[in-house]
Image 1 (cartoon, protein in one colour):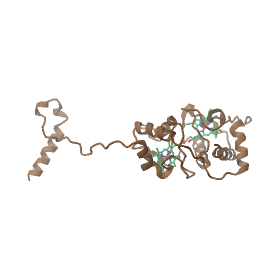
Image 2 (cartoon, rainbow, N blue to C red; image 1 turned 120 degrees about the horizontal axis):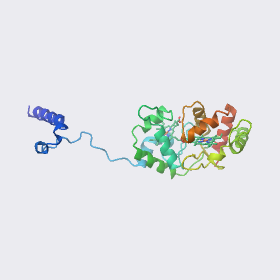
Image 3 (tube, helix red, strand yellow; image 1 turned 135 degrees about the vertical axis):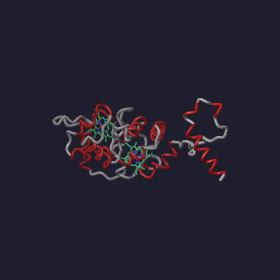
Image 4 (tube, rainbow, N blue to C red; image 1 turned 30 degrees about the vertical axis):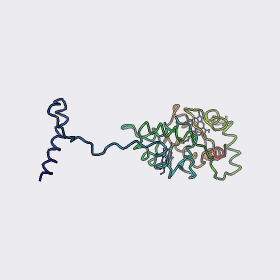
Length: 225
Ligand code: HEC
Ligand code: HEC
């Protein structure tokens, strides 16, 4: 009985709290407003990476699953920006359409995203080990470094660099990334499912490439070290 009475009193205090906030003299002395969910100590980027992300990207960001991107040694600012792009912004849909990653970033704070970027940026990169077709590599190499003048396809190297190391903060490193992931991204840019920096420049680049060209350039990139 006494317990129920206490609970009712607590409820009354809780409800009255916002209104009586100014009348401090009447404020209850008992700590009725102790939060039920005390804020947990924030996890470090390393803890998040090994506890949440490792299943798909490996703890050090060197994913061995061809659909999941390698994150190790990617530019910190780019990773942070991508994590933000997976998150819906108010009523606006996320810039990058990935139900899996959108679920992953839902619980991350902007600070977590910044720290995760810094964490993956300092990991040593292990390039994709998936075997590549030699002929495709040759075709892709020409496209990557020289583009295709007739179809107005610019050289990928002009923005992602001759070694594929990218130029921070805007242009991501792509050398050694899994070909399957790259093809998937090129398709997403093409369909407008992935927006991006620099006036959606990747969407313009990719709309002029056919399927064979996309495949060849992706396979070549996966072999770059
Ligand atoms: C269930 C598997 C899974 C988990 C767990 C996961 N990811 Fe991903 N991640 C993916 C897939 C798949 C993609 C590619 C999404 C796409 O664009 O379609 C991706 C893409 C990304 C990218 C974009 C990389 C780039 O090169 O643009 C980043 C950054 C990333 N993930 C970080 C994280 C972080 C940080 C966590 C942990 C909080 C995490 N991921 C957890 C599967 C996963
Ligand atoms: C004019 C500059 C420019 C050129 C040329 C260019 N890119 Fe990009 N690329 C970008 C930018 C900027 C981004 C990052 C978009 C974002 O923020 O999401 C990007 C992103 C990408 C990504 C996504 C990387 C990831 O980890 O998800 C791939 C793959 C890619 N480019 C491949 C290519 C290929 C292949 C070519 C040549 C056919 C090319 N790019 C030419 C500017 C360029």
